Structure formats: structure tokens, C-alpha cells
Image (tube, rainbow, N blue to C red):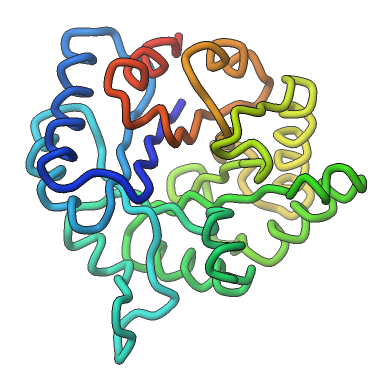
Length: 244
């Protein structure tokens, strides 16, 4: 089981050190049955790395460039992230697919760069409320998987996160039946497309301590990708400790 805390565009360096220290304190001497990683903004990566280096927390980045190097002002490459100490990187988050107009082909380039650099990418897929209401949700996600997931993958070098766009930051959470439908579909897609079916599939979208325990009951759940609540050390840690 894997629990990821995506801090998004939050925390200065001082706040990031305080937050990561708080999570470490909450988890200290507790039985932890999952791997936990935090995903700070770029400027905080080095400071958080130093804060968590003697703990059981891992470090990840929120995105990487489609490029490996070159004249791409403002970009951060997968190799740079690996050199900074990251183990993981989120790619294809809906806030970038929609807000930054990133295509499935862009996501595939990022995934391949991450794999080549030695990072473990977490590939995000998810449907809009319009897609769901029109009955296109499964087709939309299958297309994202078809065009964003490479063939050279296994449970040790990649994860997939299902995040319905309409649930991110809205407080709306699909019921377990809907989550199961998508997790099972992704699992079937892996089997039918000759990928490793034991790859962890995460759920993300308005996860909190009140609904996490119920979500953990979903079949094929491999963990959680948590947004806003990951900025609260006590609540985020409480969710991590729910894993049994």
C-alpha cells in the first residue's frame, strides 16, 4: 500500500520543513503498514529531503518536463529530480492535463523520461463530470491509459492513480461501487494489454480521515493520492495509520 501527499502550490521552505517534521513526529514509533511519500513544490525539495532523510518518509516531485535538457526556461527534468533525491514523480495530474493543456503524448514522454532517470512515475487518469454524466468515463480513461502508459512497466517502476476530476478539491467522492468499477477496469486493462497486473492503483479526490477507511475497503486499491489533507500533518498521518 502506498500513500502520497501532494502539497500542490503550497508551503514556503520554512512551512515545508515544519509540515514534514510534523508528519514524522505523528508517525514516530507507530506501526506503519504502507509506504508514505510527500510531494512538495520544487523549491522545497532539497529542504524536505534533508528533513526526512532519517525517517521512513520518501520524496517525490509534482511533475517533470517532457524534455531531458535544453533551452526550456522554467522546466525541471526527471534527471534533475532524481539528482535532488526524489524517488517518485506525479505525471498527468488533471490540473496539468486541463490547466496546462498537456496531452496524453506529453504524459507518455514524461513517463519515459522518469523511468530512464530512475524515478517511479505515478500516472494520473480521470474523467470530467461531463464525461461521467454522458457515460463516457470508461472510454476516456481507457484512451488515457492507451496513450500514456508505456509497455516496459512493472509493479516496481510505476503506479497509476485514478482521480475523477469532478472529485478533486470539491468534497465530492464517488461511492465505493464507482471507485471499484474504475479500479477493476484499470486492472483489466493492464491484463488485456500485457502489462503487470500487480501494479499499484491509487485513488485520489477529496480524501480525508472520514472517508479514507471506507475507500480502503475497495477491491484492487493500492493506496491513496491525497491533496489538501496532506497539508495537515495530524490528519494525513492518521490516514496513513489506517492501513492494516
